[in-house]
Amino acid sequence: MANKNNSKIFIPLIISISLVLGMVIGRIFTETSFYSPSNKKLAQIFRLIEDKYVDTVSIDTILEKSFSNIVAQLDPHSTYIPAEDLAATNEELEGSFSGIGISFSIMNDTIAIIEVIPTGPSEKVGLMAGDRIVSVNNENVAGISITNEKVMKLLRGKKGTKLTLGIKRNSSAATLSFDIVRGDIPVHSIDASYLITPEIGYIKVNKFSRNTYNEFLTSLNNLKNEGASKYIIDLRGNGGGIMESAILMANEFLPERHVIVNTRSRYDSQSTGSDGNGSFQNAELVVLIDEFSASASEIFAGAIQDHDRGLIIGRRSFGKGLVQQQILLSDSSAVRLTVARYYTPSGRCIQKDYKLGDKNYNNELIERFNHGEAYNADSIKLDKNLEFTTAHGRKVYGGGGIMPDIFVANDTSGITKYYYSVINAGLFQKFAFNFCDKNRNRYNDCKSTKELLKRLPNDDYLLSEFVDFAKKNKVPAQWYYISISRPLILPAIKALIARDFIGSHAYYEVYNNYDNNIKKAIEQINKGASKFPIQLDKK
Image (cartoon, rainbow, N blue to C red; front, side, top):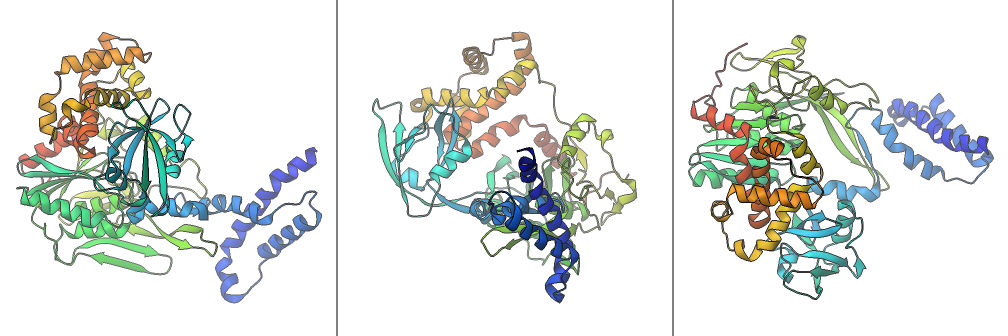
């Protein structure tokens, strides 16, 4: 039995190693039909398994389980996507999916509807924010442990297909039944777009999909029509996506024949530049980034910074300078293979260090926090051997993300053990939903965030209600720590209440009033530091 178990463990490993060796010379084999020693060995292993292995096994199944590990050995961003996962993986980039059109949150093992997307299938049949989904096609989903992934699989599906939801609503003692026909649901890239001051427009971009540029340009034009002449583009937390969308966005701000990005593959290199048709070439610009801004976010920020076109504020970005191409395989699975590196206009490759098959790649972010980079710019490790110069003579560095022009530390002043207790228990979201649920009739007629904030109870009342709610959820009141964390607690719960009543954009309209990065951006714009060309001290 021991030998049998060991065989089951080591055979997939042997196959994986052999396939990696085979991939190295795969191109030669394809083009010249040269049968390499590795391919011969692989064929031998297959025959041995089929002819002599004690149990009957499926070679295809073993290989399918090995493909992800094989591709992952190349670099941290090349991935294998099984056929059954490909559609869901593509949805975020394609900009739409087929579903019922709601935002939801799982509260106490119950699926609670947070927002109903306007003109979507759910709104058309009368679903409302605050409804609880208790069954899907007569399958109970309430009071059981359920994940976001399971809910999405239940609710999403082929366009035109029908599902039946059982709904509990506060105004009805009986469970309500709704038949909904799935339809195309847009995946929006813009979380918020509004005037943050009479002349400063704010746009939060959460991803780069095929629809991002059109959404972004619409937001810019709407803000311009409302009086904006200066803009804050918030790319914090934006992990990237489709590079072409970032290029089109940068083109809006750059004069003609300015390089936006260079890409260098194994066999050639390409340069993509601006065409001079951008409508916002004279607008003042601030770009916000952090350690979770990656890939296409870094292409946009790098182009703006290298041409001294706008001011970059925040913390050092992730450092992803590799370009992936998605290649469809014969069985409808796919490989996202790194095919090039990209370089900013000054020549920087901002890809951080990695080793072949490095499993600790993402731990680098944790290391940044551990050595204090999130709190002190002096703790940032820059490779002085990778020094470059912007168009107007400022020093910038490659090899580890985009370094902001102005560093803003992660604010920890209000963090206490009480704050960690309530946030780890998810009590901000639960309290906000509970508050909205009880007060929906009182505030449902609010048409704007400003109107809602005027009508909400005062801060002392809200904080007291939250502390009582937390006590009922097993987090005892500790007023010494609560007082210290008050500047963090109140903005969070008010922003979430605004989101639940008004929409996702309202969250930013509230929370940005307390955000140090936003405050710094407005301060710098008001003092003229965002004017072209950026003229900060040259170090």
